[in-house]
Image (cartoon, rainbow, N blue to C red):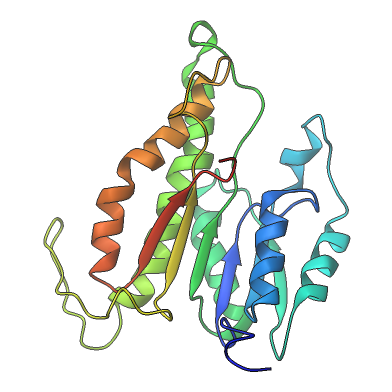
Length: 227
């Protein structure tokens, strides 16, 4: 197949939150595979098991992604509880083990359920959603970006100091990061205060993180998949 048919050939993507075949993460992982990418998927089955829709057969999920692969691409999967910073740190390393590099990061994972109204909020609830949806996304993005910040010829920078741009960010082959937000900017999300807070934080910091990643030639987009 030609480059036009497989524009992501030779690239590797990590997609988080790929735990069920009816989920957004699965659809994204399969589309990246159809475009030629090697794909490493992340899942955390205990989360779905606690939801009304229940869990899925993770072997079948992995088989679905594998069936979408094209060319010489390969796939793999790993489980991690992204509330644990140590597991977040290891996730990128496991993804890199698949082909030796990670070129695309899609942070699709999200905590859902167990939320409440403003009158129901506790520190534990807020921290659980923040740790899963916000902190882990930023930490994963940091680990992804460090691959390129550590490249030969890239000077070290002090905290807050702007790095000189090292690659054209408009290149089709530029590394990509995608964050998922939600409907918190389009109207009330009653009963989902902790969830809306965690997603609003990602939407609010997108411009800042995107500007910093551009200096490394990385493109960040935050999307609301429900719009």
